[in-house]
Amino acid sequence: MTAQILDGKELSKKIKENLKLEVDKLKENGITPKLAVIMVGDNSASAVYVKNKSNACKKVGIEFEEFLLPTETTEDELIKLIEKLNANSNIDGILLQSPVPHHININRAFETILPSKDVDGFNAVNVGNLTIGRDCFVSCTPYGVMRMLEEYNIDIAGKTAVVIGRSNIVGKPMLQCLLSKDATVTICHSKTKNLEEVVSKADIVIAAIGKPNFVTGNMIKEGAVVIDVGINRLEDGKLCGDVNYEEASSKASYITPVPGGVGPMTVAMLVENVVKAAKQRKQ
Ligand code: NAD
Image (tube, rainbow, N blue to C red):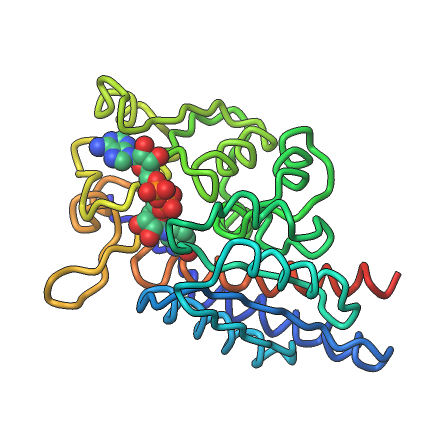
């Protein structure tokens, strides 16, 4: 079997084109959606992600303001900036780019972002609402994965799904998203025993580990759907995912490439969340 590619690049383009029409309508009603992005300290990977987000916002007509704070910024200074942005009615979304320097408690910062402006879906209110099935801002990466599965008409209900990775931003919300669509979900992590055996039984495999080529072909069930969230930079500068693409694509029914899979979908879902926040401001 040769897997069909889940083309996140193409799909995200289509989603952003539709979002641009919605932004045009909002502007006709006097609302220009605006995203504020905060980055603390120098991090070359974060700078690339912020640039991608900024380009995507500008393409659909969303205003974008960057706050680049020095590494020495204190937690209180960061919190004060977030509070100022919370109070600014022209700003619909606030995004704090992770990682932040170790002396800052990132969870306290996420908690300070108003849930109605938390377009990354990291505030405990949004996380809680996702868990109990209420409308909320969903973390952009799992949200993008779900949108991709939906757009390609991939059945989730009743399927066995294995998520590898239990981070707050990918693994855990991914579990909730799949569960809400009636999958039977297992989470694997660094302490999981017999990981290969567990993964090899899954109809849907989501890899979010951060280790190049961690998921090999022998772990993939014939016909499984393979979603590679990982973004790893190799020594030669090339990007690669957490899945051995060559091996897995010969067994999977569908697979995401890296780059061009989950990454662009994450950015598109951020744009969608900002538009949603702006629409709520209108109401
Ligand atoms: P993280 O480091 O917070 O979490 C990694 C998870 O992998 C942990 O829960 C850990 O338990 C698990 N893990 C580590 N070693 C393992 C092992 N040997 N066996 C099983 N599980 C193991 O990472 P994260 O923020 O969730 O990101 C994961 C990957 O996804 C990274 O490569 C990151 O760059 C990428 N990422 C991509 C996007 C995107 O838009 N495509 C967004 C966020 C993160």
